[in-house]
Length: 174
Image 1: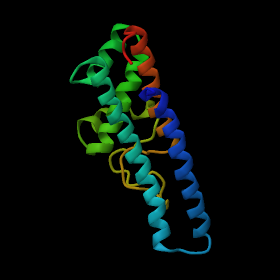
Image 2: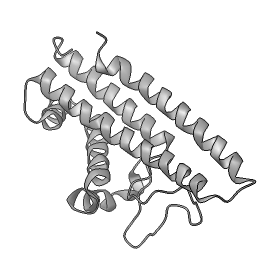
Image 3: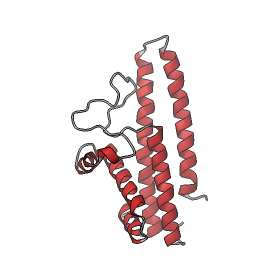
């Protein structure tokens, strides 16, 4: 069986391509019809991207727990990144874990930590009192982190980079 990190980026590309195809077809159909079901389809595409990103990171956490034989896969991975001097990768990983937590739980500690450094994040988030990412975008699904193609790719890239570093430090890790 192929490893998770070998499959995850392929899965991301496949998912993005298929969701974007549906999105494009729906936008084209909206040119001649203002049907509520078409608007719901656009929102469904956005929700599916959110579900995919959260799921990808949740499975990665299980992958880390099993591969590192621990109960806190993210915590152990962060410690390894710190120990091998990859503080920039650790910071990016921290931010992605926080973003996924915000997608799962909404406002709270993770959201507040991201707001404090929102100007330096590689993804968009709603700041307090911002109701939309783009006013008038009927496809927008209400969430605090903008999950677009770039965010999904960032999830995949982060998972891959963290996995490679861990494998270099622990050759028996998958």
